[in-house]
Length: 185
Image (cartoon, rainbow, N blue to C red; front, top):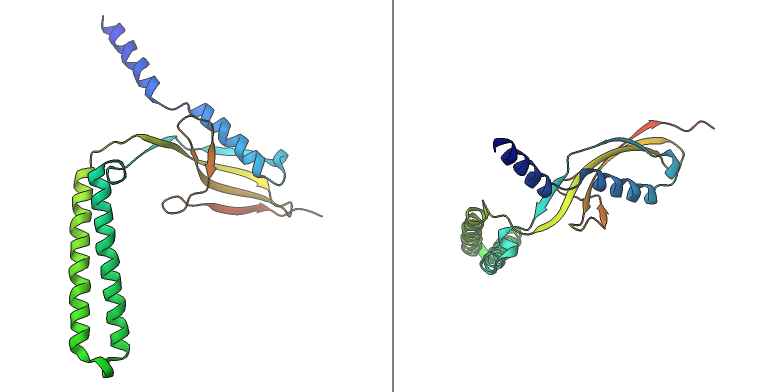
């Protein structure tokens, strides 16, 4: 009985994990289609496949409303901050009273934005939305257009249906390149 439960648990756990090998094969194929010299491609390593889920603020009506409200407060704070700086540059014309008004409004809107963002963070803390994509970090070597072998590390995303690959995302994901050896002429 105990063995049956363990096997069932492992089978269920296996169903929820993405197919690492299939994702690696898709990424390898994608990389090969983008290289100057596909025959020079050498896999260095793949990271562990991660899942990307939609966030609370983008998946629920309340979340979208609060996200829009936080953005509006943040935009208003930016307008008043810019106005403050403009008045500061021409303070002889407008005086410190106007600067103080703009600064106070900028601070108030920033405080409201931060307050709404805190609510979004708290409500979304344990939220797990729908699956958006899988992500994987891949390091490989290949020749560039000059014939030099370079090592690159890039983040890739694969759609939930394991059909489409996208490359090189900014933000938390970085792309690194290093020249390993120059081509000999």
